[in-house]
Length: 324
Image (tube, rainbow, N blue to C red; front, side, top):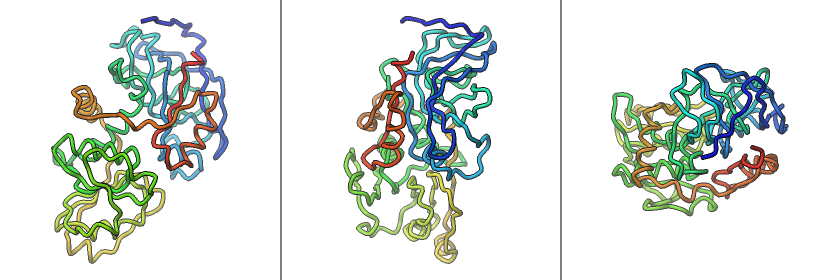
């Protein structure tokens, strides 16, 4: 392993900056100086989120802590530690997953992972296997999927129905299968109906079942609640694992008759990440076939347009290695 050392007193990085809605730039930014508990990471790959990052791009993101332009997006990055603070428990040379950074001075880090180099507290990093390479960017979504299955009282509630067959829906289905459930997936877009591995994909209007115990929606479509509640068994649960920009509403009587429960799945937690890394390491969870598009960072604008507008693009990767 070649460790590249850098002067920590004058760190800079090339970063993707959303200067304003639908205005993307590549800028050379000065980074905050690392402290004794921080590390400096050179980023190899970052993923583009078609959920939250699309909202930042379009300007449709609801009020959110730290939300302001200009900003550096991205929370799915993989890189290697090049400098480790004196109080850090990480070491130079380690390959790590980086869930974002806030190290850009007056430019907001929301979520801050789309840069050639970041300064980040060592405690936020997740060491990963060398063999994962670019697939490491998928760990955030895998942990998000695992978190959606976490019951508030402890243990897991595995989804019987998953709504949406993007990357998050596919990871949910693969996790459910790995943990003993045989889910059904609803998807109406013909371009996203392929790629099922051991589970069935169907359209909602072709599925007559009305006794699902757990339905997990990852579509982000706020108008589906009445449809999903109508498919629940009594005491069943709808898990909202997408990101919804508009107020949600539903008709009360059908929910009352079913004694329906609604649960919002928030951000993944360290235990979720640990669980999915172990599932990947053991071979029970595959990350194959989910990264469909790749661009160098110099082609960032094209990459973002493709990620947000091409239904065939499941996960877009930006390759930062040419600017290290």
